[in-house]
Every structure is written in structure tokens, then in C-alpha cells.
Length: 142
Image 1 (tube, rainbow, N blue to C red):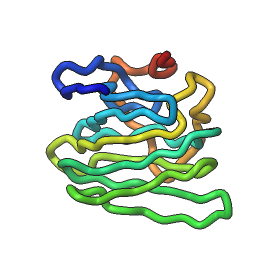
Image 2: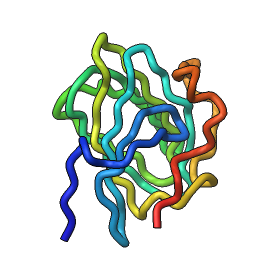
Image 3: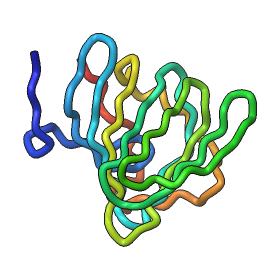
Image 4: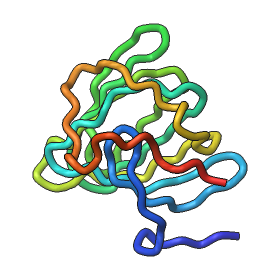
């Protein structure tokens, strides 16, 4: 059995731009706490093998998703909203409010490493913190 607090969790950066904290990990998946600063627009990508489930805790933003069959949608991300990102779906997110967008994100299976996120062109021009340029990925977790 595991217990973790957001404050004690290891910090990192996602390959798409958000500030993350590693909450829990097991053989079938992992959970992070993600913070998207005001004005940030993440890089668009497609995950090769994982699926994600997001739950919005606070803030205001949007997520664009395109399924492998070409169906597209833009969903407003506000507290209480849950979204999924099925394997092979393209997506991009942004914080559109004056406060950070904060979510928990569960990935299944656990994040496999740098090659998982294939960066693509999305509907919005990415804008990430300058100290983040050149980051490859979050570390592979054991």
C-alpha cells in the first residue's frame, strides 16, 4: 500500500510542457498532478501506447482531441470535468484563465519513456516556459 501527498511528490516536467508531480505508480498505471501555468499552450502530440484520464481540480483551460478515426473536439477544462485520451489520439491543451490549470492525470500502462510522445502540429501555437525548451521528457519510472 502506498501513500503520497502532492507536497512530498517528486517534481518534473512533461514533454508537452506542464509542471508535474509524480503521485503514485504501480504495475498497471501511474498518477501525476499536473499544473499548467496561465498562458501556457502545451505541445500537441500523439501517445504511441498509453491512454490517459484527466480530472480537473482547478483553473480554466481547453483540450483539443482528435481520435484515430478523425473525429475532433475541443472541451473546456474546468473543475470537475473528466476527459480521456485514448491510445493513438492526437491532443493539445492550454490554460486560458488567469490562474493555473491543475489536474490529476492517470496513465495506463505506466509512462514508458521518451519515445512515447510523438510531437505533432496542433490547432494552437505552443507556448511553454523558456526554461523548458529542449527538455526531452519526464524520467522513465521503475
